[in-house]
Image (cartoon, rainbow, N blue to C red; front, side, top):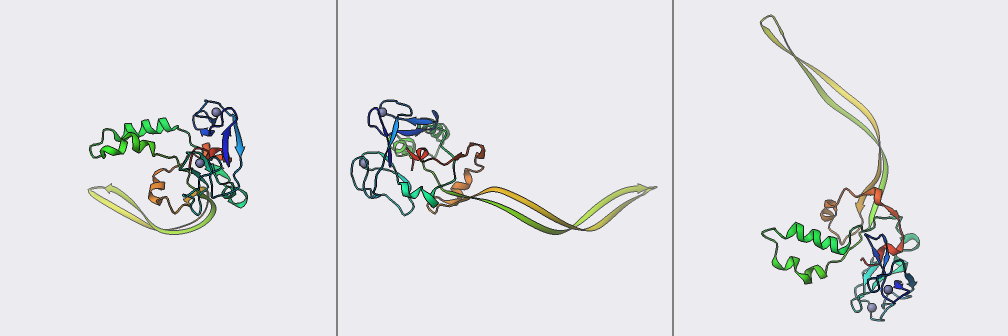
Length: 211
Ligand SMILES: [Zn+2]
Ligand SMILES: [Zn+2]
């Protein structure tokens, strides 16, 4: 499926800062309608063959016309995610942040921040499992308590040794585990902790404009 603007036929995209669907062609807000594409092989907008559909791809950009396509069957039924952390900065803000962060670094390759490199930047969603679990923990340790005191001219050191035994019940809520083989785990770890308070119930529209 694709989201098409009812006013001008442009591709409506989710705009992170407006928190709404937005048409980059006519600046229309929430003017989208869904155009269903029945196949995973061709672009519903221009009919070009989709060449970059991976085994688990659910959203992609048509290499021919640049339309953002969502492969419905990959995000429906048992494939439907429960929650999504929608993008909250725009492409322009992301570019600004990149320039600010890397612009003054001595070893940044000259092409890294070039117009053509930034043009290629795409926002990607990465699937995650969230685990809740209850753990029962038994632990045993050795502890010492040292007490130093002086009596008369003599300093005494008294060390008490304890065997410490504890039982604990610990509940973990929403522990994230990156469910993508394509994204490096250590790269994903850099982004933690995630802003759980910004989690939303999954809606397909959040994918429009992203991969
Ligand atoms: Zn429009
Ligand atoms: Zn196309």
